[in-house]
Length: 168
Length: 343
Image 1: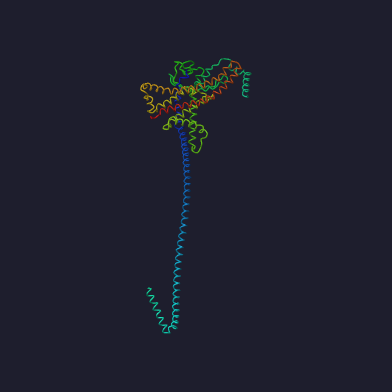
Image 2: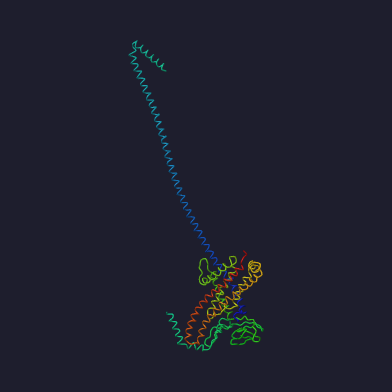
């Protein structure tokens, strides 16, 4: 049967034509196509992985943002607390100072009052001394005109002096 | 419902007007085997059709080297049993239908452009054109900005399918070296399978159903596998890791299996395509065989044979793809085995 005996002429041409077409296509055909398609596939893969990376980075940024917000809030509350403390301290300090000032003013006033009082007393004493001297003059002028009275008076003074001596 | 009505009408028409069909066959027996072998076989001319009594055929160049030297002439000179330069087409075995020397009856060295060779040249040129046009599209367009259009959109899925198959079966390391061969084999077989299904001139030459063609394809795979096999591959053939008593037997079996691989590739593709062609031709021939059994049988069997013919043609389209795919896949698996690295 010539169906299953390979014909030499067809074998010859098949080898030549298949070889030629294969040579041309393997050089100018398939590698161009497959390399281009592979390049495209690589780009697509690259883009996909880039997109994934950007997504994770975005998620990281959102987390970072939240963290920063949280931190800012914490800082705010700390600052507020500190401000409140400072206010309290300033008020307290002012109070202390005011009290000190008031005390100083009071003591000054007291000293002045005391000085005033002293000088007033001194004036009064001077007045009283003058008065008593003038009174004593008047009394002396009247009483010590008599001898007996003079003598009595001297005695009394001596007594008094003696009593003062004993006492001291 | 409507379909059956149409079929009934066509049967009725054939019953009522049987005269032309009868006139052509003339009641004589027709040579079914002759018709079929004329279609699936090779020839020195490309017989297109008969128009009335006129035979329309493309004469092809005969190129032979006989005992008297080279002869190149048109096959027209040998038609109808003619003799030219001491050569004729043998009419009986062992070289029926082939050019032989009149004097000795021997076959000369024959590289004539036969029907199959012309078909091979045309499909080779067509394949070259298709793939180079596709490659040109990729050269001229920015593949990162444009989706393939036109011929590139048609060819890209096919080429990629084979390229990915090569990567899967051969491995990441060196599949790029083998991918062009696999793409070439696949597209060549696919194109010629489809050309074989087309029943009129540019197609219709049963090329992939010819054992010479499939043998060359299978030998290409065979040499690709065995010339570039790794040390590990040859160790598996000649010194496999098997129990001692198997050691002398295994190399014999392995060598035999390596030799049988191309044979199985050859026969599988050749037999599948040949059988498909024969089945379709038989379906068509039923119409002519039935002519002498009267109009009723002829009409009804024509309907049946046309329906089956359509079915078989559709099946052949499927087989055309499957056989191309199977050949390429087995080739890639064989190559993958030969590129195995030791573990």
